[in-house]
Image (cartoon, helix red, strand yellow):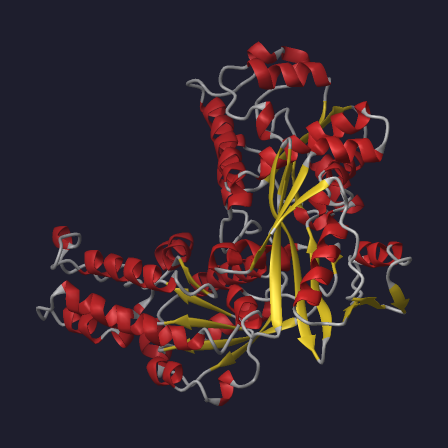
Length: 560
C-alpha cells in the first residue's frame, strides 16, 4: 500500500475536532490530513467552491451535518410546526444539488446520514407515523438524499446509525453540546474515522478480495478426521451448531457479493471434502470455493500456493483460523495478509466476520457477482491445457472472443474498478474516480476502450482497458491495463493491435507508450520488451510506426 497522505476537508455545523484527531492518528492505511472548513457554515462552504480549502487539491471531503441545520423545514418540525413531508423532501433535493457542487472539487466525498439524539423522543408511539413522527420523516430524508446522491459516482452516503449503535448508551451526551458544540461522544467519532478510512480504501482499490479459512473448529465444530462428518457440530438446534452455520451464511453472503473464498486446512483431503459434500447442514459447498489446500503441510506455504493459483497478492487476502499458533505463523511469514484475531468462543465468530472493515467496495459490477464462477471456469482451462500438446493448440481450442467498445456510462463503473485495482499489467498505474475517468476521456483528442473477454468455458467479463491521447499526429498509449485472470492468452497482443489500429484510424503516424515503473507492474514492462522485434525500445519508452499494423493473434475473434 502506498504511503501517500490524503487531504480531507471537514464540512460541518458542529465541532469536528475530536473526529479530526481520530482520523489523523488512526494507524491504519491510509494517512489522513484533516483540514477544517469554517465551523458552523455548511451551506456557505458548499456554495463557495472558490474558497481556499477547495483550491488546495483536497483528496476527499467529509460533509457531516445535523438535519435541522441544512433543512429549514425539518427545523420547523422540531419546533412542532406543521410542515408537509413533501416540502421537507424538496429541501432535501435542493441540498443534494448543493452537494453535487463539491463532487467537482474533490476526488471523493463522504456524507454521514442524519440522526437525532436518542433522548429526543417527544412523540412516543407516533414516531413512526407518516406526517407526524420525526423518526419517520428523518428516515425518508436519508433515503431521499441517498437516492439523489447515488447518481453522483464520487459521493457516498455512510450509515451513521451504525456508529451510534456501536458506541451504545454513551453515543450522545447533552453536556458535550453545551460545553463544546460536540453532538457525539468520542466512541462515535472513533467508529466514524475507522469506517471512513475503510470506505476510502475501498474507493482507492485496496479492498480485500479473498477470505482463506480453516475448517475444523472454525466453520464447523470438531475435527472431522477424528469424529467423522456425521458427528460434526453444525446447524441443528445446538447453540454452537447454529453459530457455525451463521458463520457460513456470512461467508456465503460475502461470496455472493464478489469476495472469493478458499480453504487452507490441515486435514485428510478426502475426509474434509466428504464433509463439505455430504453434511446436510453445510451452507457452503465446493462450488463456493475458488481454491483449496487440504493437507498436512505448512499453512503459510499452502496459502502462498492459493494466492499464486488465483493470481492474487498477499494484500488481497484475509486468513481466518481458530488456532492462534497458525495465525501467528501466517502473520509472520506473509505480513501483507490480514490475520484478524479470532474469538475463542464460536458464538462470537459470526459477529467477528461481519465486523471486519476490509471488504469495502464503492460499487458492485456484474463481474463481482460471478467472480467465483469465473475462477472455477479457470480450473477447466487449466485441465484443458494439461490435455493438449502445445500452447498454440490450447489457445486455439479455447475459442477466445474479445469485444472492444468505447467508454460509456454502462461500462464506466467496471472500467474505473479495473483501473484502480489492477497492479501487474498496468502501464501507468494511475488512479481515478469514475467521474475523473469519464471527464478525462471526454475531449476529442482522447479515446478509451474497454475489452471484454470470453471463451468456451465462460465470460471473464470486462478485463482490459487501453486509452490513447493524440497530439501532433502522435498517439500515446496512456492506459494499458489487463486483469491477471486472462494474462498469457495473447490478449495483450490484441490490445496493442487494437490501440495501433485505432491510432491509425484517428490520423496518427506514430504510437508510443511510456512505462511508469511501480513495485508491482514489471509484467507490463516484460510484455513490451517481449514485443521488441516489432517495437523500438528507448529505455522505458516504446514507439511504433502506425503505418504498419501490429499483427492480431489468429486464434482470437475480435469484435469491435
